[in-house]
Length: 111
Length: 114
Image 1: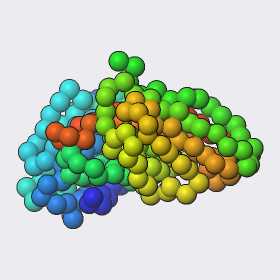
Image 2: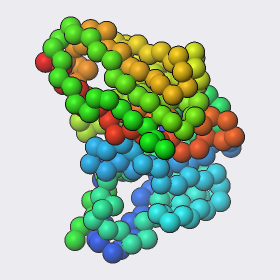
Image 3: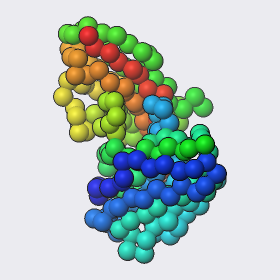
Image 4: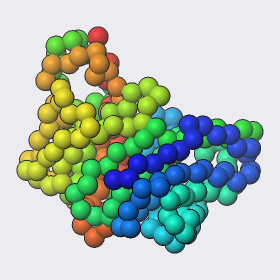
């Protein structure tokens, strides 16, 4: 699986959009980008994933650059409950690949 | 569905003791895995399984054994606990065929080895 690089921490004002970047310059053509978050030592929670098109669901939007070497997770209106560690993972879809997590980005939403 | 369940929630062991962390899922997922998370660190993969009777090592397998006799259960055994194994342990499961869907994580087991 390709390696990802994320900033260790970010702050965001409550109510504003939180934009979390992820670099994955060695991503392969069949690898998807997945985002998870972990709130206060709970089990990680799935947020969104995509291959090359931008994706949106009820939690967030995922913007993937045209060359697929980086992506941005957007939380449109951050709340205090969005304070968490956010993990960006790239891997192929299906099959028997093992999944590893990096250290992620600690997002602090400020009142 | 109960999702992914883990027992116990907390455990204190003495060095050299053995124990088994239990993980069960009721979603008929083929893929199950164990992670450990040390303070301020990301999750590191210990062992994983792609189906009953099939297991493989992850990044940090030393000191741990696993088996997968049924689709539902994936226990993690510590053979001789060491203080370095103090950590939070998460079990996860997902489908493997038809695309890698989301992984579902259990609530974690907090282990302290004295």
